[in-house]
Length: 184
Image (tube, rainbow, N blue to C red; front, side, top):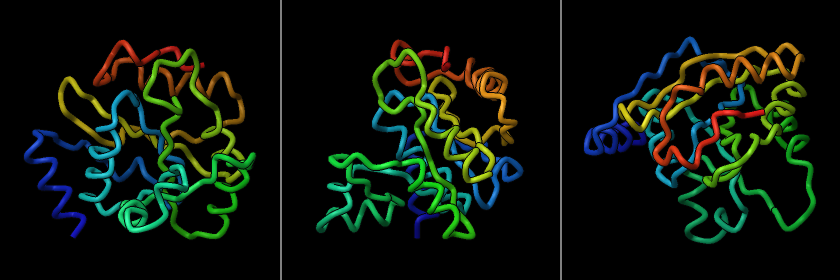
């Protein structure tokens, strides 16, 4: 069902996918960048669904409650109570420990607004869970969404972030003025 919905949405919107299975692991943190629009989640999820990837993502827990909550959970949402001071890194690592397969989609910018630096939670989740980082992307200029790399972190933060930054530097965002290509 999700595969059909995804194929239809990508077709009518004119998007193509450049999904490459070799850049995905059974357990990984999937970066979602650039992230400058609410449309990003839709196009990203469509590419994953069309290729049989059951990606999960964090969202405010209010979205995962009630009747609308069913829809968000079906989409792959994992509700997080942001009113409490919780350790999201530990929570995510625990999810990786409990699941044989988990692709956790993380918009590292943390917001659709322009940021000076990416949030580094994705890095800490991946290193603590001992999983690689998949490089999911949305190229709005060419309407191509996909996965373009699998990055095994070395523990050298600067070198790892430089490699990730090099991958994303030429990918055009929907709103380029909101995307800072200098990520760390």
